[in-house]
Image (cartoon, rainbow, N blue to C red; front, side):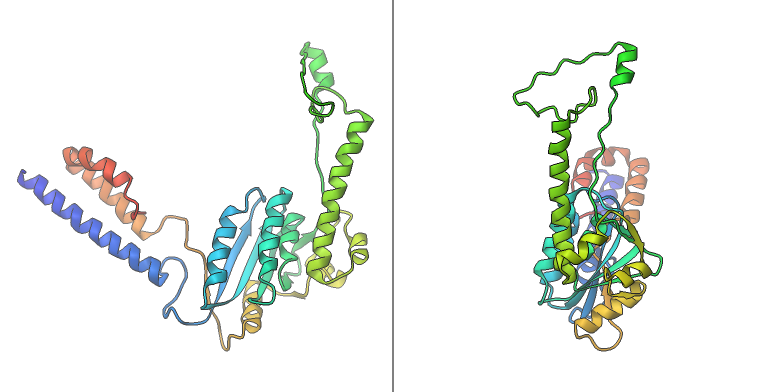
Amino acid sequence: MRGPVRRGVTILLLLLGGLFAASFLAGRLGVFSGTTFPLTQEKVAVLHVTGVLEDAAAFLEEFETFKERGDVKAIVVRIESPGGTIVPAQEIFEEIWKLRGSKPVVASLGNVAASGGYYVACAAEEIVANRGSITGSIGVITVFQNYRELLDKVGWKTQVMKSGQYKDLGDPTRDMTPEEMRIEQQVLDNIHQQFIHDVALGRDRKVEEIVPLADGRMFTGEQALQAGLVDRLGNLQDTIDRAAELGGIRGKPTVIYPEAKRSGILDFVFQEFQSRLRWQWPDLWSRLRPVLLHAPFLP
């Protein structure tokens, strides 16, 4: 093996070993995930529900990790979401609800925690909203587009073949029949009833008390407090302090977050190394590239 190549391999192995060790220690000590040393200190974990709710898998994985950790005494769920589809909201609600009585979960409402965002919050033992948080919107909506008149003008026609009378319900190329509208309304009403039921369950209220508030209207944090939809006003730090209190933590709590998914210093170092290797030792790079791109322990 030629001298430059041998030196390149040696440098590569040393760097990979250093990166592996740094990655391992960072993961164990939480250097890049917000966890602070020592590992036995009692903590409050902060998880985020953000954006349109379409899939709950990532949140549930993080939630499962923190609910099993003995050093995590309470969890704060920070919500910045206008809602989304019903199932992700229900899946998150149900997992948080299962933890009731064993580990406190407190919801913190950000700018918007409405519809499905508020649905999620209701599973928490307490809900803390900022004064101007937009929340509530307890309702269900679906929109069907109708392009029939437009398609008629351009001479576009469709031919539908179906195995059931209502299989093409909502076809945008034609008007819905009264019976189809009735069926769709029944579906929406049923989902709405599920929503109301879970809000009443989470807020420890009677369904009859929630129904007048469940017409789709939005509330500010102040209005929601008056209506009994949240427990208190405060910011994220206030919520963390309250969660620590409920979790029996004395003094200022240690706060941890899920492992960051964004690029960190290890990513930067590794990418810089790849760049130098590519330009200074192109032959070696061509041989090692498949290995580097599939190394499981690297960023």
